[in-house]
Image (cartoon, rainbow, N blue to C red; front, side):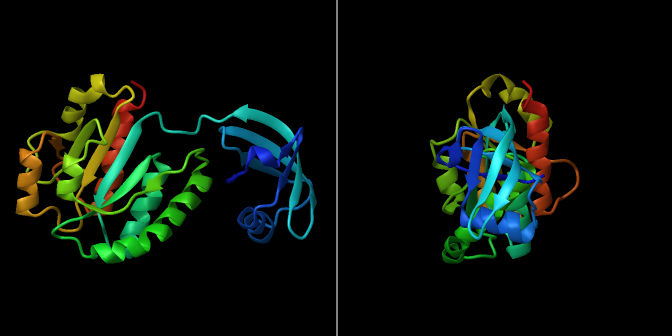
Length: 246
């Protein structure tokens, strides 16, 4: 069941009124929710409310709280993705799936092999943020990832915003991602981890050299060459599997 975000200002004892126009449209017009049905609502304090719909008027929904609990539907890692921008459908898929996996933020990378210009990327940021927000509701996360402004590979390598940086590279990698993660396991507490993945066609020779010279980890994702969007899902899933419960 998708959940909907509310404010604590919408709560009056055991009654919650949903009046946000987007939520109202989705609940009433899309889901066709009826009086007596249940909804899941989440406030800014990550408190989840199971509610029963009591009345629906033209602009708002009045509900009664049936159950209250603290939601823990949030990734335990501070995991971020810097990813070479892809063509529209592939990029939309990356944003959606990375959000479902719990990523905290997505930073579009403009690289030598990028098929989309930086000026065009800026125009797409709001659309990608909307896709991420919708994915949050579907997977019942209680936090929203941020879609950042685009940067170059050099800029992200030189950034001081992250504690651990892992570049996933094909062919050039001298160690597997699993082996790489063995080195960082004792460093992940409260650490901000950045995963760097290239675009279609991968990084250029110049960019490989940048990665090689930088003080960051580099790792491979296996013997096969993966599509860029597949590499994102593969890398994030493996990192979560290896580090989430440590």
